[in-house]
Length: 440
View 1 (cartoon, one colour):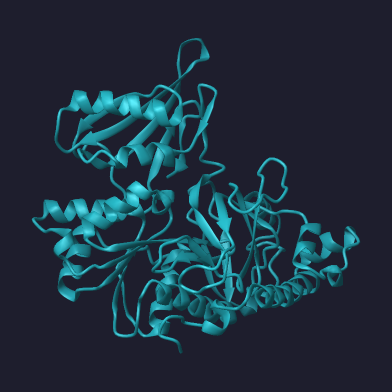
View 2 (tube, rainbow, N blue to C red):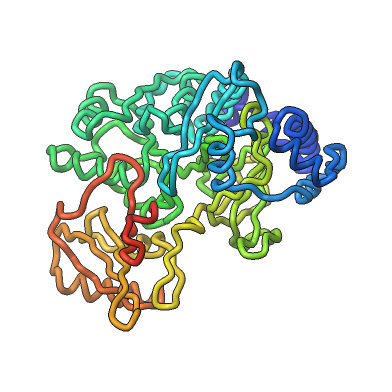
């Protein structure tokens, strides 16, 4: 094994050879869906689709998109898991579920081979951020139905010692970190900032603890430069963004030590980036919605799954030598876009402004309501750690108007006023719908 790559024969494949491998895997996947999934077989036969017609990677576009709504409908109509599943129940050895931040959680089922492939793909991603045998890894994601908990198996596969710490309260997290001195930690961006805040409250300097590598996922914060810098400064550690999705394959893409975009595991998933309105492919560097097709998953095949995540991609070989496409961060979700006062914006745009002001805490909330004469009112609530509150408020109003293009009512509250979260933060309260609507 190369000291630089976990699987050099795959990670550094020339593009033409990588695409030839993808085509073989895609043809196998489509055949399996056709013959083994009641839903896919029925849909393909009724459309007169021949799985042998997949002769190039572009031929995947002959098939329709699916999405989260599709999954829920299949589960409701054909419980417990849906008729899109491509293996009998006696081959399913693990059941996880989505986080449910955008609706009712959907099941994600795995065969034994799926679990082994997950371990291997996750080991590759951990290796890419510098983890090695003998390292100690603090896994701060919840080990429960939440599929992210399974990722610690990748650390074990490469020989690191994994601490399954996700369900503990923050004080115990800090106690374990202090006692066992892990060099790696993984959590959501909001939790990593919250944990650094709690460390200071307990009289500890997070930068003086053992953590030197932070992996973040579950929120767009890992793709927001100012949020990433704040995490790195708090912990005196390198911060790496990660992307996974339970419906497809949690280990989908992560940054390497170059931190120049998230390398897609293109031998496990086939990526497309489309215009969310037209469904047409967008070009390199253009923003669009990420669509993924599973290439090695047995139990839960997904063909052209619309993730709802906005991104762009770059195809040039990374300085690290890896040849797989790189996502240029996840900039938002199509279902967390806020439309107010005739303007579309993402919570991540607000977060980018807030993180640049050192006097503010790590917490914020966006509140949208229906004002007089049906005019939308948009407010941002945040907290001040120090400084002149009125001066901070005025500065925020000016900078938010400059970045987003609309006026926000800014409220700067005392430290500790806003609720904290252990996992995915919910940042948007849309009172027009009467519910907490959007994950960060």
